[in-house]
Length: 305
Image (cartoon, rainbow, N blue to C red; front, side, top):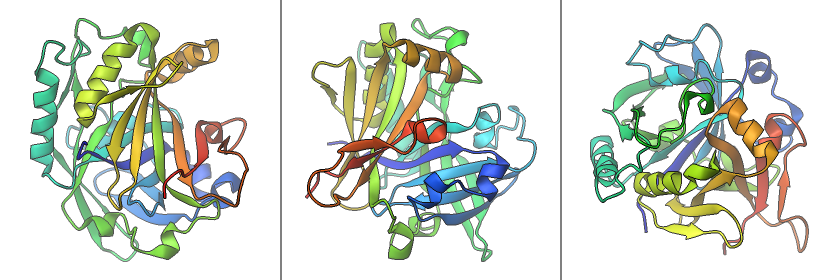
């Protein structure tokens, strides 16, 4: 069983959305103000879950930094359109440097190596933000570094930059400062949300096996093939409690899938949030809305004990 854990999901939003959250957010979730990031014009609001993971509403309130600002790992989000854009994993049993070393060793080992996708992780970079009370929160972020491999997809499938695998996030200050998941008022949500059930990754059909292999190496997880579907489910832990989460690597098969991948690029396409059962029966899984950002977020009845 992998020691890698879900950390958080990044949802890029514009300033009107950030300053006046729509009803699909406020009717379903308790939102906590995060703070302002150091060194760049960005801020965030959080939806914190009792499993220690969270959803981040990330906003540029001014011009994003250029790509040559190597000390600002969030710069890669500057050209992305609003919506689900990225997610972070962590490993609370290891330091940032140890985690990166272990992942790179898995990516470079075996006959498949990185499956020819040109994926490797760089050195951790320090990050921080200040909360409203002035408390500074510090962490380290490690982003993937991409090269041209034998199976690297063409640039036409990397709309607005390549972000087709997750990044790593490790705390320097106590995790409960960055993610106050011990505060029940912040983790009690109207929809009954308790954690991240799954992050779904949309990839080209002809490279499905390669992406499943790379995600397996990054997460340190074994692969489970979904019955009757062209997808692979990978197990991943959560920061708090005994619950587990998953990453689902799914091949783009329908016309809608292909159009979506061409529009937004290979990678994170749908988020599934676990909710507590609300009596017997009812829908096991439902979208938060039929269109827009909310159509990519699903609520699924938690199947745990």
